[in-house]
Image (cartoon, rainbow over all chains, first blue to last red; front, top):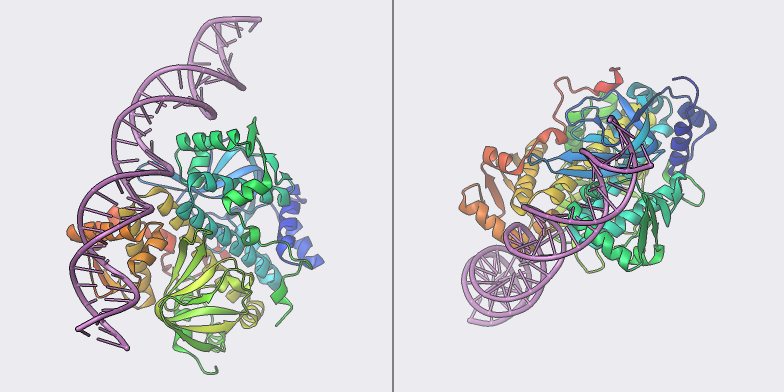
Length: 252
Length: 252
DNA sequence: CGCGGCCTTGAGTTCGTTCAACGATAGTGG
DNA sequence: CCACTATCGTTGAACGAACTCAAGGCCGCG
C-alpha cells in the first residue's frame, strides 16, 4: 500500500508522453497509495452497473473493457496495457455501464478515486493531464468505431495488431513488430466484432501471406505491409511531442 | 464576441446535469468569449490533421465527428446537439485526427482553447466538470462500438433513435419520442455503419411496423417498443444525479 | 418546366456467420 | 509416465444479412 509501485512509474512515464509535469507533480503520482491484486484469465474485475471507488491501473497482462448484449454476445470496446489506467475516467463518473475483464493472467493496482480527485484539485496541471489521458482514450474509441464500421475483417485485425504493437512499444513491453499477444481468438473476435471462426480464417490468411506469425502467444508482424493493409495512421495515438510539452497549458 | 450567448447557457445547463457548480463557476462559463459562425449543410468545420485553437459549441443544428477511409467511405463516430461542446477534448489535444461536419444547416460558437484551459486552472471544480464531460463523450463512443459491432441493422438504427431522443429531450430541443432529425439517410448510414440503401429498407420496415414515422425530417417513435428492440439502456448517458453532485469527491 | 438531390425498390452477389466435426495442446490424476 | 479431459484452434459446407449495381420516383428549387 505505501511506497511506490513500479506500475505507478509506468503510468507516470505514460502521462509524460503527452503532458509535461513538474517534479512535485511527478512525486505526487508516485506517492499514490495502492493495493495490488492478481487475477487469473477471464475474470471480471468490474461489472456493468457497479459503482467503483478506485481506478484500475494495469501492472502486468492485458485488461479489456467490455459491453454485454442480451443475447450473450460480448464486445470488447478497449484494451489496456501495463501502465494504462483502464478506467481513469471512472474517477469523475464512478457509476459504470461497462465491465473490465482480465485477458490472460493479470496484475492490477487499485488506486482510490478520492486520491486522484485530490491530486486533480491540488495540481491543476495534473487535472489537465488526467483529462488529456481520458481524451486520448476517447480518441482510440473513435478510431475503433471507424474500423469496425468501415473496414473488412482482415484490415480490422491488422489495425488492431498495429495499434497494440505501437502501444506495447511505447509502454515498454515489446516492439511494434514483435510483442506478446495474450488474447485468444474468441477475444480477438470480441475486440474486432467478428466471430472466433472468422478470426481464425483471417489469421490463417495473414499467416499464409507471411504478414504475421504467431507462436505461443507471441506475435511477429511485417510492420510496413500491415500498416498499409490496415490503413493505420498512428496520429490518433498522439505522438510524443518533440518538446514533450502540453502545448496549450503554457500558451494562453 | 462579448456578452453571453444563449448557447453558453445551454452548455452550462448541460454541465450541471452531471456536475454541481458554484455561482462564480457558472459566471465564468457564461463569460466566455465567443465567435458565432453559421454553416450550410455538409460543410467540414474541421478536417483530420488540423490543429485547432478553439472549441466548437453547437448552437443550432447537429454536428458530426467523422473519420474518412482511403476508399472514400466515411464513418460518423459521434453526433452533437445544441449545447454540446463537440470537441471539448481538443482543448487538451489540439492536434486532431478526425473531422467535424455540419449535418443540416448549423450555427456554432467558437470558444478559444486558452480560455477553457484558463478556467480549468483557475477553478479545479470546472476542470473536473470538463474532464467529466469528456468522459461522458467517451462513454457514448464505447456504446457505439458495442452497437455497431454486435447488433443488427434494425437495432442499430433504433438505438440511435433512442439515444438522440433522450439527448434531445435533455438538451431541450424536443421530446424523446418526437424530435427533429436532420440527417439524410446516407448520413444515418455513416453513423450506423450501414449503406444508405440498407438504411432505407430498415426505416421502411420500422415504419411499416408502426414503430416510427418520419415526416419532413421530424421523427416520431414508439418509445417503449423501440427501447426494447434496441436494447437501449440509458445509464451510459449518465442520468442526472438526485443531488446533482460530483459524488466521488466525497465517497471512499 | 426542367433539373438535381434524395428517397425507394429490385435483383444478384459477397463477406462473414452458423453449425458441426475434428485436431492439437496442456494440465491433471492415477 | 501415460491415459484422460478440457480448452482452444482448425476446417468444411450451407446460410443469410447487408452490400452493390441499377433504375425509377418524388419533391423542391431555380
